[in-house]
Image (cartoon, rainbow over all chains, first blue to last red):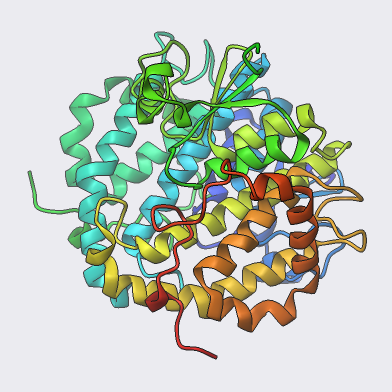
Length: 242
Length: 242
């Protein structure tokens, strides 16, 4: 088989920000090489990431994964990769106004992802979780009580009557929002249960995307959520049962 | 005078993420209305932000400022505004590869800004600084010792022989990097002094941009750095003198 046109490079043991890229391929049946999940002797493993972030390859050096290789381009930063891929995979709005709005939503989803990461790593990425525990409890409580509901209601209000975030069809923003909703429901099941009733359109969108992705979600290509990723099911960060 | 084509809406008392937008206008002599800094009776003040973020205006609702109004479009998210404005103001690379790279750098600058914000607000945005103090000291130390030098060296290595981040001329990424360097030097003067020697190209770029912006920087339009913004000069977060 010829090499696919697209190569994704991302940490092989977790979904993380790479999953937002992976979903674009999986939802459209686009062939891609998931390089770091290949054996090391085939150029895979964490070493694949380091070759790029440590500048051993010509071209602009990415600060971090995810990294997309496409037509000799090396592209990093999740929202940057998404806005590069979406029009090529039929997942972008047709007009510029829609594209700007989709990018705005993508960046906002990225902000939520950052906040979720900080619920378990409030002191910076250089400590193990246990060192963060007290600060993490405070930050997670603030996130659950003040931020999560606000974010979800924000996206809920943005979903139009057709059931999508931008215009009348599914775009990259919907795929990313699916991942965000799934992640929040996984990481904060009790707090999420309290918000469910406020966001029926979000749940319907989530279900529609899950249907489209059913084969992928049931496959070994879908890494499970785990405690190395962004969304982690630490019960002590999910607050008391409602 | 006719209304300018561009309107910026941002918190009137601080530079924040709005400053990255303002610099695009100021560096190119582009007329813009800085709406929230106008008197309330002329549609200004914080109320101008709330009209948009609370959805009182038709069109996609921004989650937060900065907000750009341009040709009936309402555009939010700093990197999204920058990629909309840069080609219109002569600040974008000419080819798509360069534009993707400039956007990647812009997003990376945004990540640093988020990390700097978290040095004084590690527990979330809902607490006053004093409540964060112990966690802030830990996070700031991690930032100073592990992140700041790494970020600055990363951008330093990206600056080409022509002295710019992307290609042979000044782009929006350079203006934003100027602001980042200025902000880090303000917030962490002792730690910054330790890194200076490693980043000569960054300092030269900073000086060149400062020259281009000299009129603006000396004007009352340039808000001073202060302790409401992202970059704050808390000595206790800057570590011991080297």
